[in-house]
Image 1: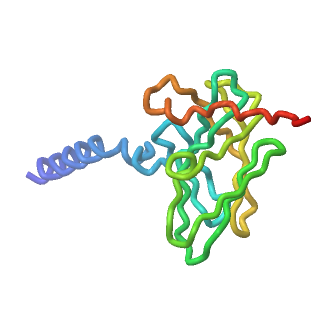
Image 2 (image 1 turned 180 degrees about the vertical axis):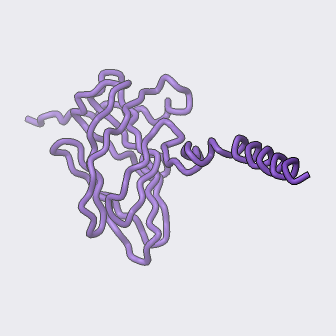
Length: 162
């Protein structure tokens, strides 16, 4: 009788461990942070959070529009510094608000990208007292219908007056 009881306990333990053992060794997919869209989430670059950053470029990759969501969860008005090569631009982000770069705000255009759609370009992000980070941001074009309206048009060239 005792051996049957011990055998049933052992069998029950084996079933429980067999059914749940994989979770002890494998990472849980829901705890892995990743960018779930076409853009990239920017790691900590200061108090502002930059989400789903991507660049929509014209066909030859000479002009790009930075698209991203920027969230300011602090009580201070802050500025996001964004740079590609020597081109540095800033955008104010009011306290306790968010800004949709290039979508609901004016386009953040970068000239002379020298990177065609389908590639990545190194973009630096910095805010507040943060050190800032450089992240490889994907460059897309207007092939997908939901990106068509964000493809930048070439800036007019200034003409000399006599």
